Image (tube, rainbow, N blue to C red; front, side, top):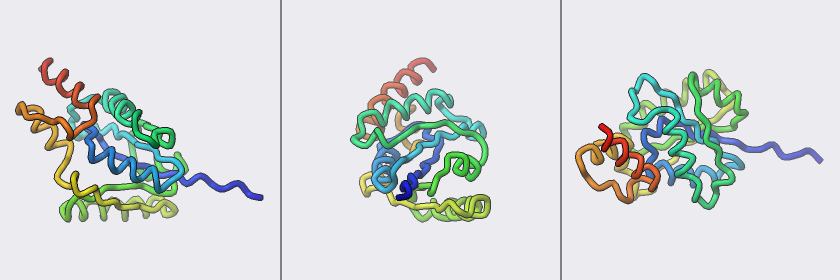
Length: 168
């Protein structure tokens, strides 16, 4: 009897910082696939608030307490997502869509990824209704301006944001 092939998916992002919306999509994605790779993008062009290593560390810390943490691996990557997905032998790329404004960009990226790696599907997930408004940019803006981010980000991210803002 042939061994069942592992169904592996990749959930890529800058995660600058990771939010509870990201964690919600990670949990739901991990239920759909045997393994989920959370791929933290280097994204130098975006001038991230947290360093690459900090974002990887914070994502690892944030997923530790998830009930399905054993199915999730956090990996940093640079370059084309399609190439990374092929290297990781992924079956799918998971992307979140919060609003219609996300769709055009995500649709174009999905088509390009299909062109580069036709065997890998893109799966779009809608966030839970409670996270539709949430983005890393909004979280940073609220934190920088002294607002309360409790309940918007995992505890390790909240602590790291406070520490980083104190040092600036």
